[in-house]
Length: 229
Image: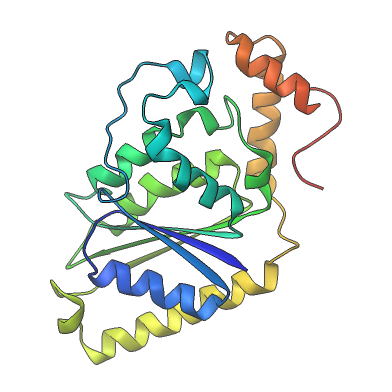
């Protein structure tokens, strides 16, 4: 099993430790990226990825290693501490670069057989909205199964998290790891993803973006073929 963690910060705090705990329970090969250390570019809104193709992104060279790791992984872990009730700016900046991969545009078929986990921590609150920032992308990329784990650690560092809290975290990561391993190699998109794909399929038959429409035609998705088996 291959797992990639994308950390929404460059320090190894509570969120990082929980994400690694889950990855270690999954086993296999692990690749990690820390933002903004490994990628810190802001999307320029040039629309090149939508109208010309993703290879025209001005940040392609720095983005490419992360894209390849995502494509190769079986499990994606998006991890961000809560910053003012949302994901970090660095995480949002990265996700902005993959707008072209959303189902309304050119989703990659490999995503429909992947599982994703969105992890967030805060001293108090904001985990739900932070996880949604990341889970929205995972869903619209087509990930077959998306888990969320939000933890109020009641601390400002991993070292100061209580033993009682650590025990609860351990129990939750064990449960998620078990669910993921049970589905590896046989996970399929649920009704919500299939329904959204169907809506996008109808839209692409008479869409506004020729690049997107051609992509769907070439994949055979406008006919009977689907990106899952």
